[in-house]
Length: 71
Image (tube, rainbow, N blue to C red; front, side, top):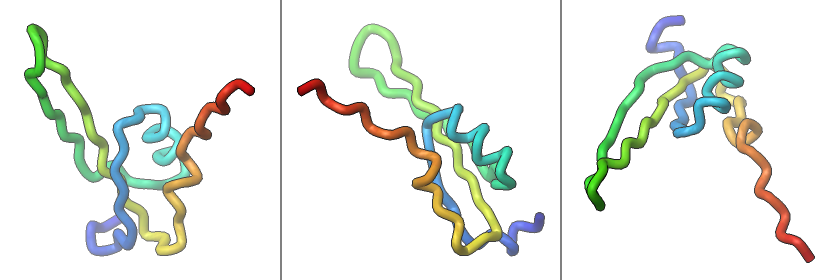
C-alpha cells in the first residue's frame, strides 16, 4: 500500500489492538515512545499509529469493552 492510499488514521497504546488491526489489513505508520519523569523512575508510553485505505473502517471496534461495575 502506498502512503497516498491511506484514508483513515488512528492511534493506540494497546499492542493487542495493534496486532488485531494489522491482521485486518491496517498498516503500521509510526511508533513513538514518550517518557515522563514524575518520580524516581521514568514512565515510558508507546503510541502506535496505524492507517487503512478503507474510508469506512471503524477503529473503535477494536477497543476493549469497559468492565462492568459490580452491582
